[in-house]
Image (cartoon, rainbow, N blue to C red; front, side, top):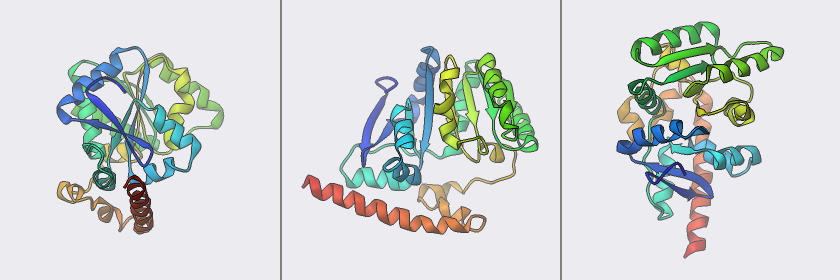
Amino acid sequence: MVNDRVRRISVLKVPVDIIAPEDLEEVIKAMYSDGKNHQIILLSEADLMLARRSGEFRTMIAGASLVVPISASIIRTAKFLRRPVPVRYEPFDFIVRTLSILERWGKSAYLFGSGPKGLAKASKNIKATFPGLRVVGGHSARFQKSFHPKIVEAIRKAAPTLLLVGKGVPGGERWIPRNMKHFNSGLQLWCSDVFDVFAERKSRPPAAMFAKGLEWLFYLPARPWTAFRIFTAARLRVIALWYRLRRL
């Protein structure tokens, strides 16, 4: 737990944090000011289910400084289990809020992920949108395996307040805890589509659709396999029911 503005609960034995929007700035400031490394996780329904069966993924989430729920099903499950109800955030909106906070306090960011052209455009748009934010470096996810230590060293030397990681990096989100030991301090956050959205290559689901928990329908035409999430959702409901019955 970062400070008393964050409340950590358990949803099906997976940690989830409750952060009020009005407290987010103080929480972010507390993390980047204490001289430690802090991974921020944007927790989806699929992530929660994966954390229940994958040791490394479960350990990563348990060790994260902030676990932010982004799926409506996580909120519904917390309610169903009569747990305190977390605040749900839209992933890109959370990142924009975080960058805005860092810009306001003259902090820095390093961008890692995506392809060279996509990252270049994303970097340009981030600099234009947040002119007070210092982008102290960046590297695409396309590189020879032997070059990886040089990227890690470049990030270490740049010492960004925020290391923003996107798709394509080896290990995905797990790349952060696997390499965090090389960094002195700062925030680390992974989001698969963050650079594609900043590069205007992908769109975000409408706010009304996200509010209803139907954002997966927005992605369905481009990602037909998204339809299989109904099985994950059904399994989540069954497990939640079993947990509630055990407590009766």
